[in-house]
Image 1: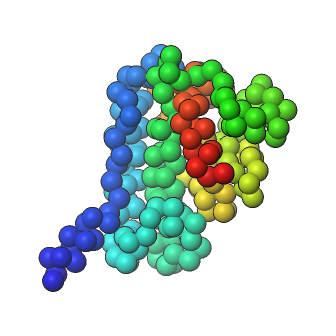
Image 2: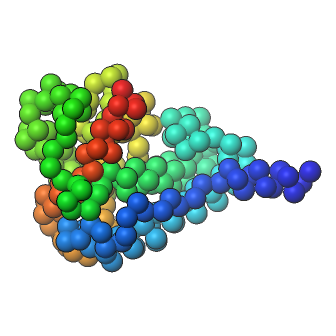
Length: 215
């Protein structure tokens, strides 16, 4: 019985998702060394720390990552901050890897219903890019810039640290990591240069799929 319970608990633990491309696939816009450290060290640490926190309340291993983040205010006091920081970090990064693609497959502009929604909400794609870039470059310290659905409508905003839009009842469609570890090796303190380069690797079909699924 104990062995079965342990196996079930292990099965419910969070794991680092593999990248959908090689570490160097986003060159020259995002360098291979940054990707190795970002995915293999930073993201892995969020996963490890989240599991360690949930081990103190093993029943929480049965909840999905989305359930944990949506219900963050109901998480036990002794682990709430750890789940907020590390659960948010795990979810944010898991999304981030999937909405990027190698040059040639990434970049350009969205099409279809996502493009229509962006145009309807922000005026045109250029204005959308300008607003998202502004959210990213003006976020003080560490955080993320987001395109998210709130009440069925698209919004652009930024969050601090590893906070997720899910914590406020919103659904992230696209996220841009502006923690220094995401760009400092290549761009140093030039965050606007990193943001400008990042548009070349945005995987718009993947973003559109997320948009359709959450809409």
